[in-house]
Image 1 (cartoon, rainbow, N blue to C red):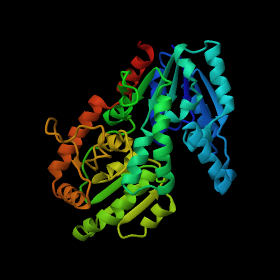
Image 2: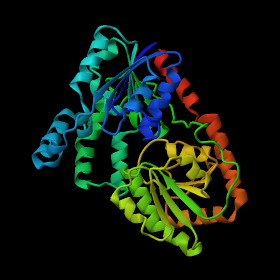
Image 3: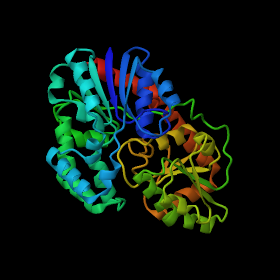
Image 4: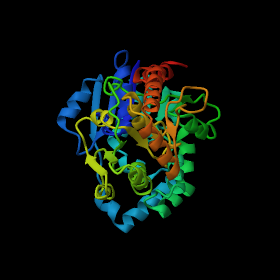
Amino acid sequence: MRILMLSSTFPYPPSRGGTEIRTFNLIKYLHFKHDITLVTQRHEGVSDTEVEELRQWVRELIVEPLINDSNSSRNWLGKVNRFATSLITATPANVLHRYSPRIQAIVDKYVLEQKCDVITCEHSVNEIYIRPEFRHRLKTVVDIHSSVYGWTRDHLSAGASANVLRDRLYLNLILNRYERRYSRKFSHLVVTTQDDKSEFLKLRPDLDIQVIPNGVDLDLFPERGYDQGGHRLIFVGAMDASHNIDAAKFFALEVFPHIRDRYPDASFSIVGARPVSEIQELGNRPGVIVTGKVASMVDYLHQSTVCVVPLRTGFGIKNKTLEAMSAGVPVVGSDRGLEGLVVDDGKVPLRALRANQPQEYVQAICQLFENSALRQELAQNARQMVEMEFTWESAGKRYEQVLIGN
């Protein structure tokens, strides 16, 4: 099958963020049987070496520059114009900002000349290149990593929005119209969780929307050999992402001091690239360690007693949760951190402890600090779940069936 894959996010290396991880691993699975033409955009952080390494995984790699219009994004007139355009087109500003006429011409040519059998959009931001009439000529698939409407709504309800007025305007005036509009252009929709499926069934009840969760590379995140004990907590993720910033601040300020009261030697490591100033400042607090980018995430996981996933916003299965489980580290997570995973419903072996309020975190973490048998039980059960249900091979197989099916 000839696949034209669109990813405005450069999907390499598969460690830069959740979008990159999912997109690359789907490419990695599909490239063995299918001809993939990948059209992507390169930002200034992408090296020539990374471009050449990605090229090995596709039949053809087309790389366009990511348009940078930072000057106009800072002045008030530019902001007003962008919001007006978003309102008129029912398209978020970040989607319009990434739009490339050169990529549009490439996509149009591929469809006109029948050079592909299917077009896939890896993340909804790429929907802008799909014309409504395309679905009558070939299969069009959008892999929706998460609902932007649901994401923004969650940020607002959790008090995690960096710009409440802007996000409320976008939520009420643009985002619902946006998802309704773009979802109608596609012949197939793919989501990562049942929650997102429920959201999009309201917009496209005529479709059999497929839920294909994220996976984890078991070789990159091997199960650790033994539990080192201690009182070391870890939270991982890109530390310039709003949901991770909110989670790290919430835990460091509202939960961890109570842990330190009980365990004065306890540490909380915030591990991830690009920590913003708000995160760096947390490193001044007793017991809090901000590492920035590290050479090996799995090494830090293996050295930890418990991995916390205190997310209060965001839709979708979290790679950070699956990776900790794969590494054999017991997890204490919020409803959002454990979204899409069956871990504690009484019908399966206990795979993680759930917490949402500060006192719930304190109780769960102290329980694990004191009970090595419980730590081992959670670690083993969670690793088995990942092996059975959440590998990239299983995700790739299911995605391939969407592409080649009716």
